[in-house]
Image 1 (cartoon, rainbow, N blue to C red):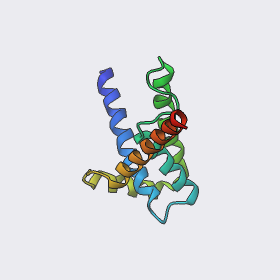
Image 2 (image 1 turned 30 degrees about the vertical axis):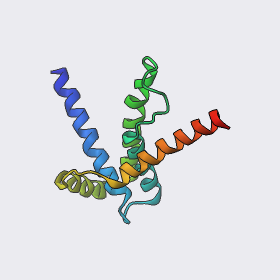
Image 3 (image 1 turned 180 degrees about the vertical axis):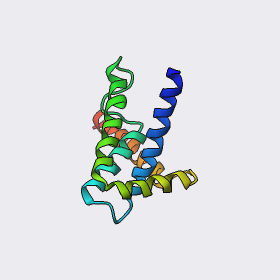
Image 4 (image 1 turned 90 degrees about the vertical axis):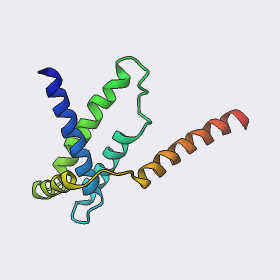
Length: 122
């Protein structure tokens, strides 16, 4: 019973993230909502966290609190009828590899590697 609820919440979060990604790229979305939706999706998909996951309890709390809070706030900034359209579009879209997502992750890791290299070899 509890596991089914957790899986349901995870599916809703995944669906809302896809809808927010669509919202962040749509011209009808208010500017503040676009920015907040893009930041929320990027943080949720990024392998880099504010608090690293290896720190007991705190490392997972940021994912359990920040991502749902970001989703909630971004959804509140988008008009409900528009958000419904994004949710329907996200449901019908076929997931595929994202070139931009891969570029963003690679760029983030390149920046980290450059900073570490500069620190140790400068």
